[in-house]
Length: 338
Ligand code: HEC
Image (cartoon, rainbow, N blue to C red; front, side, top):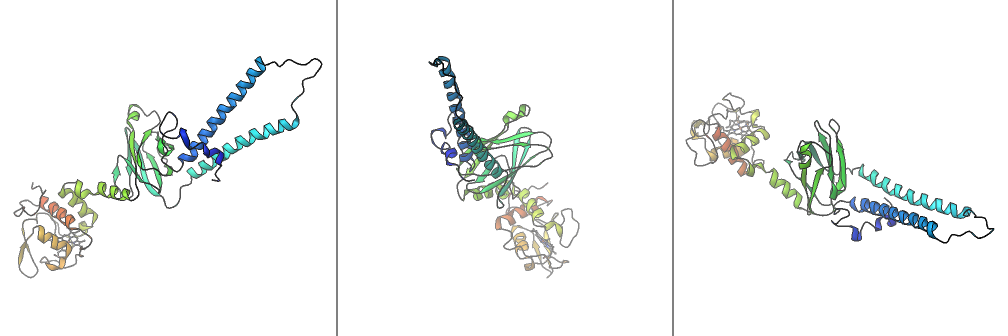
């Protein structure tokens, strides 16, 4: 917006900060919204002073009418000037508010998108990599769009520090956007009475310093370090399309089933045998053609460069958990033999 400096001057200064007045502003809207709120408040206060002052003056002032002089109406010029002045002030406030509102409902194209789901008692934030978290984390200095969803109740999402507030209505996707300007910890709340659970709907909002957001997201969505290895392995099996060729129930697909192979001997195409252990699983994943299982075509694509060392270990742990009697368990941990 064309900065109406009169309106934004009041945005800074003693009224900022987390005192009795507005909360700390941490988004690009804060300065403008606060400027408007402060200006409107100051104008309101001035009007009260002027009106009450004039009323007192007329009550107690020595407004004695001079003998024989008719009271005259203010000049047309004065009336016009007053009217125009008031219209100008009201118009400026409207213009400032309107442009802020237009900006608030027009997210930029390159924004980072996070889905906010409201459910009784909590907010859930889903990041583009499908990580779901109970906290809203955002990078500083980058526009963020929040898609607001609720399945069956109406909520109001409010993040005062970001100067954000919107109803979350079931069956209708709401949208808010902002750009955080101040790294720090803030709060998002439900600003509507939503039953007893509503009061607990407070979610931390974390604005990360430049460059720290990506590493936060990576660390929390790193299921390899958070899940037990065999569960992480199962996830990798699903994610990497292994299921296309390897069943878990013993049935033969393009490749051998994963059921019960770990710790057992596999017959290779060249007539030799090999025990399926961690090293063999690793090799089979990274360079499948090194040892080809008897009776199968060497059609498995090499996963070298796509699956890390740690991931192969998790897959091995998963295979081990599918095995009845693991003979060679010392190489991998976390497997659970039934
Ligand atoms: C396009 C089909 C295909 C895909 C996808 C595939 N494989 Fe295979 N895999 C095979 C075939 C065929 C064999 C047997 C021939 C060989 O050893 O190369 C095999 C063999 C193996 C073996 C050795 C099995 C044994 O009984 O000795 C392991 C372990 C293995 N694959 C793991 C994986 C993992 C883990 C994935 C997913 C990351 C995967 N494969 C994806 C086709 C596939």
